[in-house]
Length: 547
Image 1: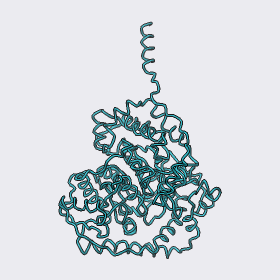
Image 2 (image 1 turned 45 degrees about the vertical axis):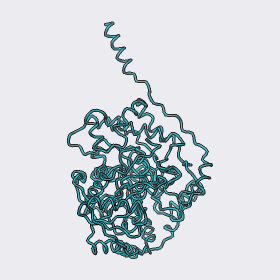
Image 3 (image 1 turned 60 degrees about the horizontal axis):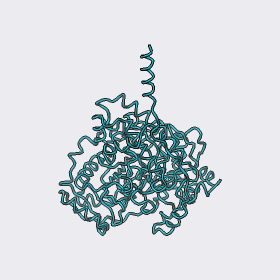
Image 4 (image 1 turned 90 degrees about the horizontal axis):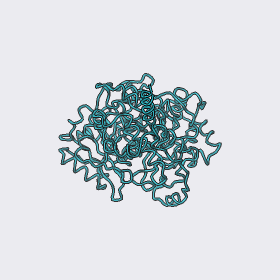
């Protein structure tokens, strides 16, 4: 009996794990010098008034991480880094299969990395608003239930832009007015979870998806503070409005992230942070449960480090949503990633925009596409008339935001109009809207009939299609080549899909993306072409300070 008792004591002692990682308490810092330095920045969008959030305590986010990595050490992080850092999803899944990783350690690695960089003022990017406190617990369950038939997103940590509902965390759109918006899962989140994707947390964004003030920095929100670009914090713009998604994926804080776009809000931060971003055809992915600007133009989309990951993540989110009529024609069950390696540019005809050829990086990459076997035609599309564009967005938001409040918001949200948000912000404009709320005030005051709005939607769509279709038909083009989000407005109203892929860096190190544009529901073509280009060029590199 004594031997048995001693044995049990030894086993009990062995099972008592001592904490390996204790996260230090975050201390707010004096940001005065950095703000003064940026006051002279050449871009008004980088003339910051604030970097740290005035209403959020970063320790709340760090505490959501702390208990989940308490037994995960620095040595564990370093040992696993070669299996995860900059690796694509198929490679990560191969390491899971070989036993070098588990979904639990994969999730802990990302959480450790977030805590490592976000708990220092010199490396913090402010790109994460909140962490799912059950992420590691969910990963453990997935480790026990693996199947050979699982979707490739199974067990992969995912970040959501914080205008996308997730039942475990508030959905704020970065706004003080929405900090208590505990809502049910968005349609695309249900799809991700059904396939085993792990919601790691919420990414920062440009507040209200960049549609609340007349002039404001990309990446700033009252809840999250100022998102920074890992390639040049306070030097390079993050792009907007999916700024946190772009910055976080660039820094390898998660495998993939959801962004959303009305006009440029995936393309801009993806190209600015040297990642791959897809703005899908309107209606390919549901908007149900996503805080809107415009039901006419809004779409979520995947933001990833590679094209293969983009295709995998896109396939995980697709599906018809009975609550979103735009998805009626959405093709279901397409596995965009399955035949990616057959992708080629050979024999395809690309429209090269004449006005962009002065950009030497663009010119160099057009030459690379020619060398790969693509045919190029220089085109000079007619300038699109943007008159009415802002009225369209404002008119839609005046209708669509109340619809979100009524249909998708949490029970604690009692707002019924944009005017209610304006009134809330006026309680303390210094804290709630340091950059003002001129756009929201315009929306609240806008007087437009539904007939006029419907007519405007059709007219803007006609103009956008004309911008692309005239040269595409005249020259029998498959794809038009753009830069970053430079033709995002035209593609938005035309409802054309766009894929941006890293195409290099300026002399100063600022990332640039080449953007492929095709006709509606030609995402498979875009992804194959993007994959072929990416594999031939391999131009993305990890931000130096986040290696």
